[in-house]
Image (cartoon, rainbow, N blue to C red):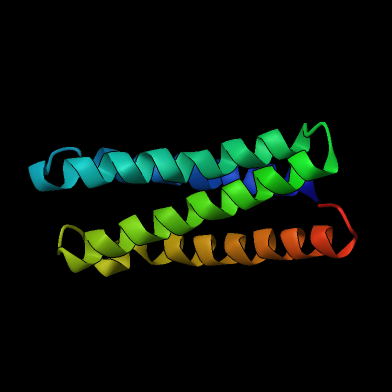
Length: 118
């Protein structure tokens, strides 16, 4: 399960890098593009760290961290659309993947907490 999540979040990060590269030429989008790049690629890093967690508490901390970074990524993507820096259709698949990843991460966190792994 965690290996699938690592692979999926890494693929998400690659798509985030592509999005960042497409925004670099727009002056007003550069700062937001950097924020999207940082938070979007950090999701996968947290999941990779979770797979090597030294304790259950550390595992939960990394999963929650990935969720927080994903939430931040969604915020920046919303801002890009609302500021009309990118068309909503360009982000449709990324948002769908982010929503699915959020559901997975939330389920993992809830199950971990339910098992007393605080």
